[in-house]
Image 1 (cartoon, rainbow, N blue to C red):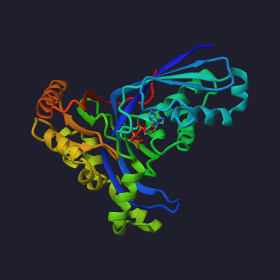
Image 2 (spheres, rainbow, N blue to C red):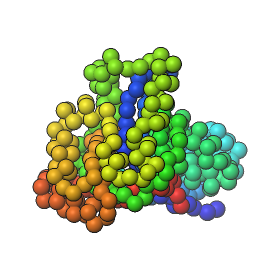
Image 3 (cartoon, rainbow, N blue to C red):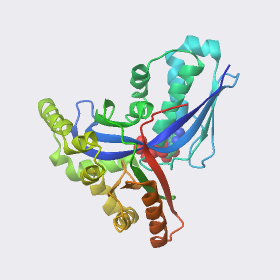
Image 4 (cartoon, rainbow, N blue to C red):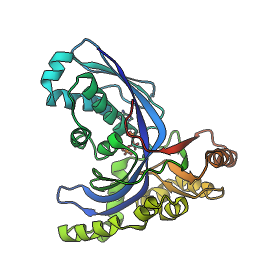
Length: 312
Ligand code: ATP
């Protein structure tokens, strides 16, 4: 039987607005998600034993049942017991390039890769929307990670509308290696501080979503206008993460000193990205930030925006 090696891209949020409370207890969100060319490599191959095995080269990533990639494999096994009985379990090897707990959806992207990889290995034949429906059970970011590119994400973040590709822009992503922000903490703190602004009635939620659909960010993306996109960058979670993590605020401030289109924290942080219009500028910005912040704990990557989701 064959083995598959999949590339699992990181995502950044060009836009993240917390709209209110959903009847199911989750936050109602409006986000613009964007894949970038910084990818983990996920290899899936039959292992001839009863259980899935996870290997990963990153010390902070658990190689047990709590790994999101393992949970993705278990989900597919439970949904398709006949395929599992026919083909058996698999070894899943994750070559981690995406920083962990960074707001870049590394775990979600690994889970997405396992769904795509096992679907091929076990010849199940699920379509992309079917895989995305399964992926939503593992986490709100998983459906986007499967299809990737540029998309408006509403609901919990799992209702997706594709937007035009933006593959002629670049990002510099910065993250302090030893700094991690818990996503549940960020949302909980936001609720404590800004819960009184939440919309929760279904008709009000619908009205707000319509405004977002016509939002200036979506228009800027439709025109593929890098400067307009940069002006519309937005992330509600900056309001709670930046005051609590001065290093993140400092990194964001440092980016603004260079020739960038715009800068923003991604997801719940602590990674911060800066948009540039050429790879050369991105490299200059990386070098400039490196000279300004000499702390060796700061890691910086340069990557293009990408139109790819999980791909072989
Ligand atoms: P998101 O943006 O979706 O909130 P994130 O980028 O902030 O995700 P991840 O890198 O996915 O965060 O990791 C969050 C936590 O999940 C880590 O602390 C790690 O222990 C755990 N984890 C489980 N499986 C994985 C995986 N395959 N890759 C990375 N982390 C994983």
